[in-house]
Length: 334
Image (spheres, rainbow, N blue to C red):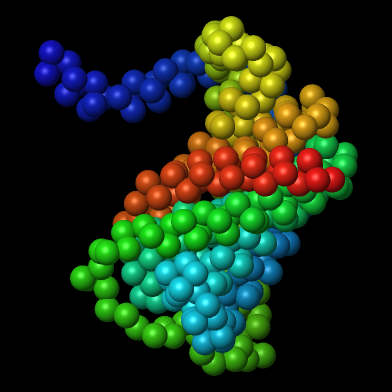
């Protein structure tokens, strides 16, 4: 029995990847359509909304903005979120830029020894968020066809993120990173020179292309995974069981499960069901949680800096729930 368990652990991912290749061959027609739909969704709705913002974000990171922000906000950030003032750059950019910029900024701060590993874990729980352009443009206007819904979802999303940040100020509060030696204002302190502008813009575009292609790759990959689950009947089985237990419609369950796997496709399915309170609340949760696809994107970024994925996972579940609550109250009062 122990031998079987050890073998399963050792060859688990090998088995999964081989099964994935076989599924690609068996369901090639449906997978091709899913890949095309995922690519179309990324190219027509995600890319135009996020790519310019990624470039602007990268440009801002090359200035002395982090240094100035740290000096201004240190007395605010420490008591509220239990992180240094320079961490405000991660909160701001993670809120206005979208997934997975927050994770990248947190890793940069840790790499520059501005924050410790524990502080990075606190930040990662709430600084990696859906951007306003995605929520307002892609979700509100493009998918729901209603700007008001986009505004409600954005307000709920930001408030939930701040709430999670306040809760996570207590994450490992009594522990200290003995390997961390604080270096104040280790970020760029001198103004950007004209002679550096061409190089800075070029690097910003390169990094932005890398990020947007990563997002596109995950959207296409998980579109295919969802297609395999649907075509093989696995997803239908899960949805039928949940439908019998909860009484929730199969269409909503399909959107919810798809969104938990890959955010953009899931929100697209939910939005197609109309603008009822339930579909808006479901979308609010999905935007807060982000989905497994984004979780893996974040994990691929933070693993290099030895930052635990646990606080991120706990924080996103909590943010999804809190965001739902805020959305419900806003809709009720409106």
